[in-house]
Image 1 (cartoon, one colour):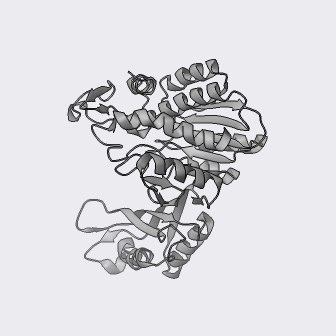
Image 2: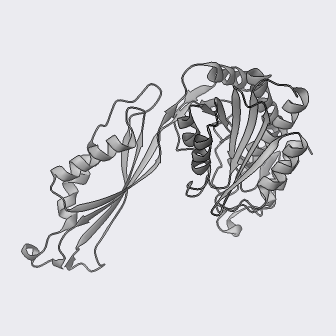
Image 3: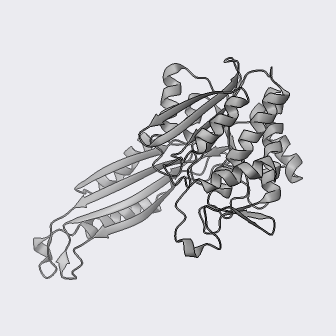
Length: 376
């Protein structure tokens, strides 16, 4: 069994359902310390974070970013095998976290060990940053670590996130940015009453409907470089007592905006509230800013990653800003250029999550080659 496969299996057996790290980072820190890394454990609340560095403090600093937590597996009986007992069938490794992202984390560790062994006097600094709060609230993980880094002046030049980015073949897609995410909980107040006497009530569903229609139909922009247009999606509407003869007194609406660098969260909030106010609603709104968009322009990092992935996949990768969010959204504001590359993402968060063994065993060389291009 290869080193990366053995470590991935060891990590999968640790039931690190977010935000529980279940000892994954301690295992990794022990290995990296033996390889000469300086390890710092940053725990906030119930969340474990590991910061491991090797080399001088001067530029450039390259960070490999990952997470040890996984999403809940769901019903055990829905899986073909125990989600926390790694199993290889027909050249495929099954287990919760195999693709998202314990395979990448294991590959990071093996690549870092190989790199510092081959290049003990490498230029700059190479680091690994892990959290156990990526799949959860993402409050006490990399978001909090970034605040610590900002306060003490940590410089990060390049960041490679091991999220499963590939579509069908390892290395066929390179993420060079992500959209921002802004969520809202909107409460529209009315007056409860009997449906037979609407003149004595004020139906919040009726008064909110035109405003919601305008929000949903609005064209926010035409896109930004490789980013799609900003999109608002209403995800939940709730009102009423359950009785069909009662006008509700309150309506609650959940919606989310995924936005490109044309916008930031404060401007979007003002634009949305301007629409709500124009309809004369009696409302309250709570905003949650998940993260601002980021975009890595052409430069040394993208050029190096493009070359490495092209060699592994056999052709130049698609360069994309699609998908949801990742923890790179907290590192980019520190001034870092950020990319994401990892295994095929077809099974992530699903029953029978898996990764091809051949892809897993190729990952350390992929990451090692990229590190050597940047710091070797």
